[in-house]
Length: 451
Image (cartoon, rainbow, N blue to C red; front, side):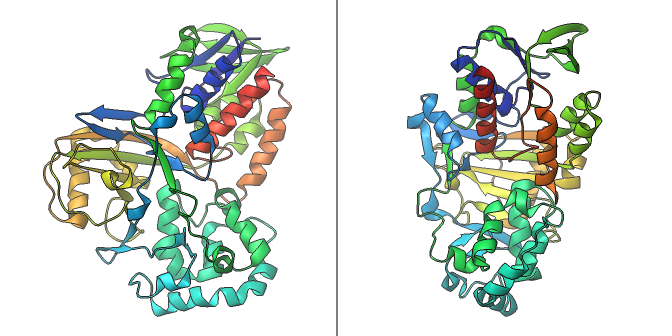
């Protein structure tokens, strides 16, 4: 059996590694660029650990941690510094802490909201009154999918949506809560509403950190996952700087056009961004391509390393709601979020740009983007020293938007894929955007292929 994997991001690399683990002898991983891992990559310099993409994963999803253990990286697994886990929201030009004991936009303890300057009396009253509306909310839960904005508004009103719901979800998905699908993005909250009506009642007393750190990473950086897998993949499988220009189904085989030649395979895993996969699938199935018509947001990340200490607000970082006047979408106080990221007495900050501004900045030099990031951070944090170095990464169209109806569209797409023997679609356009989701899907596909 000969297997093709098109795309060398975390999904493609994980699938190749899993196939090798199962003793598959003939597979090829095609990657159009000169590096593997996609958005996952770690820069290690002068004692700093700077992530060029995701800095970790949500601990409650076990699949990334399981992979790390299997790769012999158990001793490298580190949890976030949750004793100092505070996230801020920019409000009126100043950073205001999100109250303790929150799970996304829902308090697990209403008393934690007391004295918070983030919410008005009206918003606090909406929180306090939500449990009393449990029967009404459960009865009125829509049968069809709805946007995150509609869901949050029904439970808590516009202010909670604007001040915390929107920024939190935009910080994760880089999208518009008015169009993001509630069922695809936050299915557990949908299930809570159906069972309890009230989200506050459903989460009462459930401390987000009760089972350990909320976030998990590796001491040497998330990039170590990719590096360790690549080292275990047969080198003959890796075809770098090689683009697959088209695919066709001919009899029982998949025929790929590669560098002007045709190559034949028994199974095909497409692990490409949604818009690239769409173009590749169009000749095979126009309906598949239509279902892959997803909006996708862009991001720019800039990490700034400082060789001196200075005061920062206690916590993990901040989010910026729309209309607050900052160009940043979010910022991370890296050395306070995870241990061991900087040498003693040093600091590491990351700034994120998204949306239209990310597209505008993409054509600027790394130095210009780093300088812009420093200026934006100084507007919020006060004077900062000059960084000793910076790391800038551009991720165009990297965050697919799961708009309302996404689950139904993906169910139809999956049925069409099942009609094509030996075809699998992997990546962040389908069943989750986080590292654990991508790793889970890739391993499941590889296991099915290997039998």
